[in-house]
Amino acid sequence: MERRRYPRQQIDRAAKIFHEETLRYAEARACDLSAGGALVEVRAVRAFLPGDRVRIAFDWLGKGVIERQAMLPATIVRAEPEVDGRRRLALAFEHANATRSAA
Image (cartoon, rainbow, N blue to C red; front, side, top):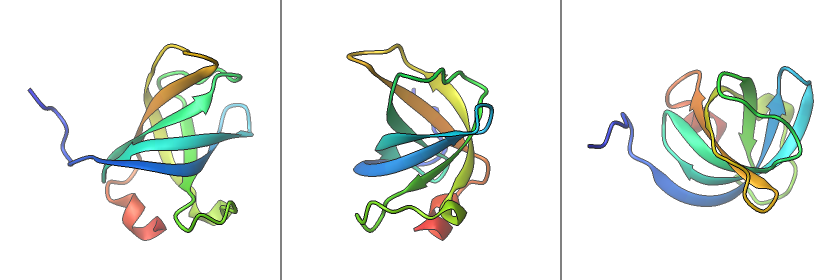
């Protein structure tokens, strides 16, 4: 049974995550996106745990530069095990439909 509130769309887009606990940025790759959250892949060099608050921004224009003010608040709801030095994080946006204003 599907429990998601919003339909998901598969994407392959560069992103940047700011981990509020460590005050550090990490490169990410968005795998899918919905109005309520995203699935992203990060290098597993940092400890990302469920419940951690982050901010994320997507490189919609493919320029490689992401403005800090474009970052959306989110919470990690699931952190998958590391595979080949990378792990996937499921994020829930603080505000549904937040990606519309950030696009």
